[in-house]
Length: 372
Image 1: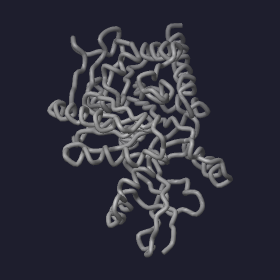
Image 2 (image 1 turned 45 degrees about the vertical axis):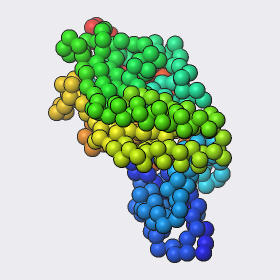
Image 3 (image 1 turned 90 degrees about the vertical axis):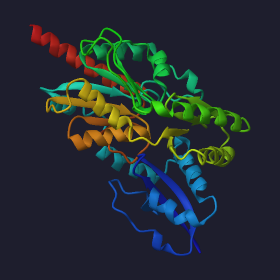
Image 4 (image 1 turned 120 degrees about the horizontal axis):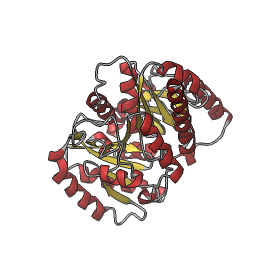
């Protein structure tokens, strides 16, 4: 029996999990085709789904896989080694900086209507220990306000729509909360607004009583885990473990999964230091993007150029939609290499603000030139 290092590619999340498993038979470790760059030396690539299926025979294997994934989601566990640095350089070649490629991006968008989609946490605001204090800077807010003057702009977040609105406080934007399951159009000030009440859409209203019930149960059962915080995002729940001692992650994952056993209509996914609980409806940030484009009248247009910027694995659904449509592009916000369908990258919210400011300035000058 030998130890085998495995780089698990979760195709639904855009995150790799580094797991060491004990294997007597290495037949399950079949090398799969994977987008470049290749995994660091000493690892083989298999799908997360296949790994969990093969490890089902071991008690607690699924929980252990979740814990390994929870560890992998933390940049603090990424060590700077020659192989990792080489891997990052290769990744950058395939996902270059959107700032460095700004002129090429503008060239691709010429003659088309740019539509902006922005995640909130980790994109417009920094990731913080207390999710209730994830405030965006005044400068970022001013930048987004200017952005919305030139382009239809939407905030697409896993947060409750009302909560993310309280953070952003810009009435001229579209807001898609709960991973796109709760959408509302601009209250005022947008030339792209349609109808008297704007766009209103809720994908999973029938799940609200169940979500509230699970929320109450999780709040009670996670009290024994110091630092754990359960957030009710109306159409989904978030269990934050950023402030939980890593030694207690396994116990927390077991608690969450035990609660969900009684609710087969809810599914568990993972983000950055957070476990997400959502209804099993076929709706995500990618569906929200398509819905908003249709609401804006761009459903079948060839002259639209959607730009989606996000940092989380849930944003991958939107990145994939853009690739499938062959329109616009996705920008992943990350300091570390991740398997992603995004075309470009930015490292942190300050770079996002720089990119948005350049976009606003480019449009302002273009508009001024047209007047002259």
